[in-house]
Length: 115
Image (cartoon, rainbow, N blue to C red; front, side, top):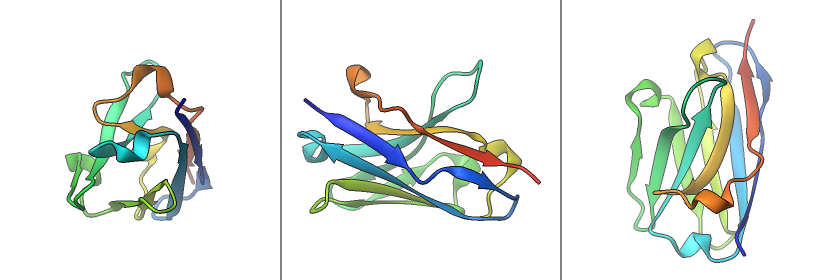
């Protein structure tokens, strides 16, 4: 059974940084693509960044140049380094494979960007 535990969120001022972590148990780290998603109330969950097992990455346009996704396959951990945070980045952030395993969402970690 796959379990995902996200951590690292918090309250940060605009322009600040946070590093999110996702600890995974089970076989999800054998998936070709792992990803970070985010969701704000009343909106659909959005794909933010993806990391392929071979090392390539991709990002939604709104975070390009500011966020960096990485995966440590030996530690079964996925990371999201978020710099130059904006108010619009406020959301609950989740990790999962891409496409996501719908029965495997964790509790997420809340990121609030506010002055």
